[in-house]
Image 1 (cartoon, rainbow, N blue to C red):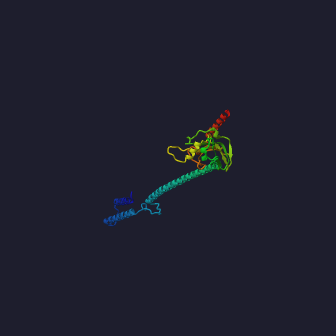
Image 2 (cartoon, helix red, strand yellow):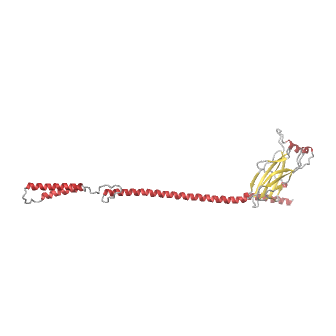
Image 3 (cartoon, rainbow, N blue to C red):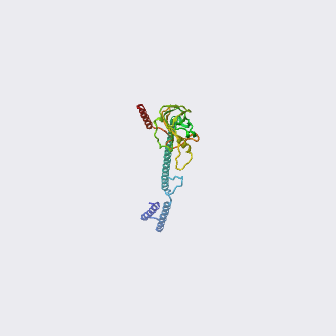
Length: 319
């Protein structure tokens, strides 16, 4: 109950008690005595009202930094401030936790990324080391020249049909290790058009005797034209540089392949083809799909080639 109401009730109770008291013998006049009592009662009521209107401090608000413990309103404000501070602290620590978690995840991701890069570098280093042995230290053979041993001249046109033609492809090892030739093939072809690849191999043109070519050295493959070179063929070769509508020119080629191994027993194979121009008495390198190639042989391909070699050897022994 508010304090002002309690004061008013106490004042009224006092008036009632005063009126209820028995009259006392007094020398004063009764009206004077009654008037004094009323004034005292009114004075008590006024005093009670003033006391009731006085604030006790419990309802007073408190300023920031001012702690009034007897004030109810101040206590409520302090409780609200504490709750607000707790809420802000919860958001703050939650945000810090999220930030720390994100940083931890980022650090873990970065560590995984750099670990993968380190692993990749290590693998590349190992691959480079292996490549140093299998590629950089490999022998590399190329046919860099083909020599015609017997020049074909125009006087062959009037000569008897008993001329023979010979040419030798010369290989050079441009690698850093020796090359072991396992098998080679060279064939001279004279005609209007090359046979479809792969051509039929003549066993007489296959060489299976191993030869070693040191780095920087050369090796020749002497090759004979397996047929007689007639005067008509010579005439066709000389006229092949002249365009005649509807007539296919006659050309002279030497083509073949070389299969060789490195000291690490890795086998490679390359194919070559050169064209002979009788007017210049020289061979010129050509690039014709199927005839010109370079590849590393797989284990299965090596087995197939070895099986073919063994088969030819058995046929030779049977003859």
